[in-house]
Length: 196
Image (cartoon, rainbow, N blue to C red):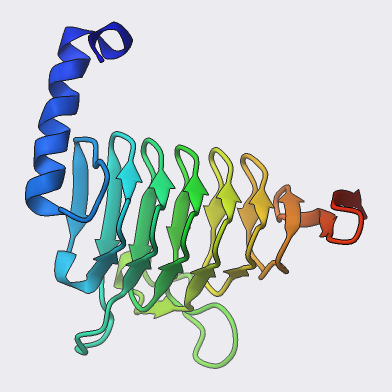
């Protein structure tokens, strides 16, 4: 351990391990610093692992006792991932999330449909609106990805680095870009990723 992380890094790792086992015994390792807000509205599955500087926050827009964030088994998120939810963010099992990823179901204000917010009102004063986010099992999310409200990412999908996901994605797809678009689908007969 000391060869890989050095003395200081090794001490930080030991402190993170102690913190994990005291505060989140079902998790594998939560590296410090770690910021969790409204822990009672967040469900973390067995084998959860984080990098440094992660922030997971439930900002419920209702008074029920339901979880705002549900994280499945064996999920790994890397450094500086930010997950925020006012209604529902669900992350399935075996999801791998690279560093500096943002996932949220919240928006300051409403900009579609009836009763849209005015740009003359300060953003912080606009009523929060939410649309659930669902990330299914075995998804791999690349570095610097943003996953926006109202999206569902199908099982086995790969999201390329720096992509912005604004629409739902079918299972077994590879998507890239801003906004993210499908460039490949997995063909189960040939067992290959096929370019579209």
